[in-house]
Length: 264
Image (cartoon, helix red, strand yellow):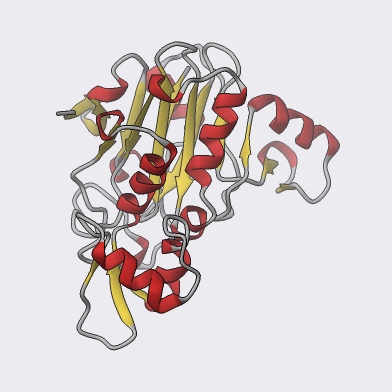
């Protein structure tokens, strides 16, 4: 079994996962707010440059080189001004050693991936829309383009809203469920999800609603690619139900985030 371990930095708590023990990484708590990824990288590796994106709940995955090209070119793929110009996207994969990649989340799933052979890493922000658009398989395909073998990947999904409290409409559940079942009609997709072992769906008393475990859907997408369950770890922490450590947009409606990062 993979273990999740608490660490302390100047009295502030953050989490690591034993599956990613080969890399400097951390799933940071709200106690680190409002520090930037540049600040947080110093906790992990003082020499590494930090990379982040303006997250847009999609499935765009970029490398540091691509970010640099977009920022240089300007245009619709970037936002902000001056020193705070960012490329748009929800996933980052490294190309070289000592690159720190970061994603922000409040209830969405932060996903950190490492390759034990190539040593490259990825950081992904998988909200329900990104999950429906298969951001994790997208990133894995890009890692494979860079020489990764599926068996060499180690994937950790950090604290996110738990399925037992995440209420969505049947329509949203079907949109996400379509990423792991061949069905196209809403009722068929929902029925198929209910029938899965360890189903990602939980009943909800309200008509037209269901509770959904987004991390489980991501795990099933990876299993469909041929990744074994032993290569995947899911943090036993729900952002919504752990107010002492994590921001939850659904709980508080505040636009605050916690950062998760990993260094190649």
